[in-house]
Length: 268
Image (tube, rainbow, N blue to C red; front, side, top):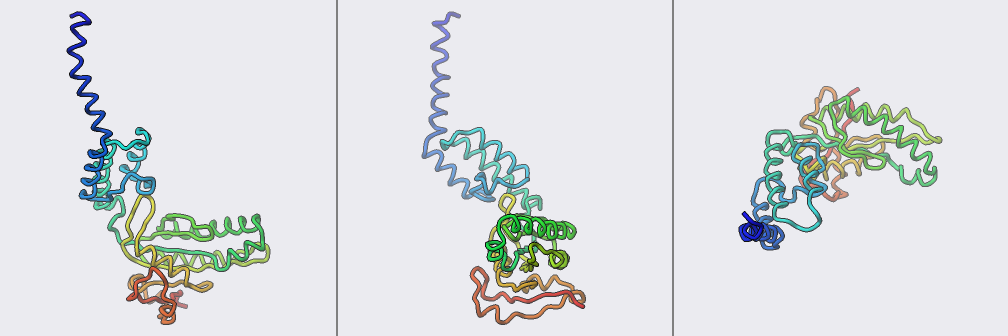
């Protein structure tokens, strides 16, 4: 077959390929697929840097796939993310994405750290943070916890049960109490809440996370504030709890009105 005969035969295939490329970038097609994604199981925003930050297989593939596309929206991109979205949803339901699993959320920070650091300077502040991290993080890991993120002078962690989270704080508390940097002795405070935080990538979001964070903010030096949901999972033979009635006078933002708060300490 001559070149002149081959060229007309190739034209329909070239036109089809051009049509597919055009449809791939067509805003109406892209928006239609995005509407479909909103109706699919899982997170319709799956694929952004936050949701694809986890270690599960769906998140890993989403990060790789994102590098294969340019910045222009594509229908094929949405189609692929839709499939990964459903896959990630099934992983969560199977317990591999930690989607609906009950967890105890812990937040810690150091009382008065910012004010002290301004006077102490960067070198002493950094040394203190390193020593506190060496004291707190092993205690979390020793009690089957996982550090979700570090927050300056504190951290967020999750545990399989309230008792494990409480035991981790008590151990960390004792270790931090032995520290001293530039004449300053740090004081740890913590908040514990049990619920079903929403997993997104390697992080957790939702009301349950907000509750734990607000409890830590309201705790005093050396105090562990726990929600009623967390108290239900504590061993009364090992833990003493006291209702914090005055807590509600402050109306902490992000905390449900019907949530009871307790101060918890190890039983002597």
